[in-house]
Figure (cartoon, rainbow, N blue to C red):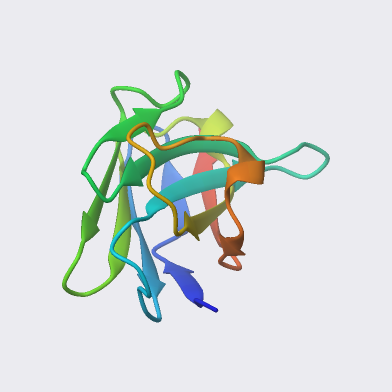
Length: 125
């Protein structure tokens, strides 16, 4: 089993930036995809960005052009660079990984079986 630990959340004003990180304890396979999700109380998880071991990425329309997903394969860290943050970006952000080969990494929650605990992001207007 892989452990995922997120960091980098916090409070920021609208228009500001944050960078989230997700440290994985290990990578038992070279084929994988990783994703960032967010959730607000009373709503389901929203997949916002994903990256495959090939380097291909998928973004939700709500964050396209503002958020960038990347990974450090040496350190086993997944990043989410968030720019031009809006109050509606306020949520608990979690990372996830699935050890399968997928050219187009999915944003669906059901596609992932390893999850981190999350880090809170709060954007004030």
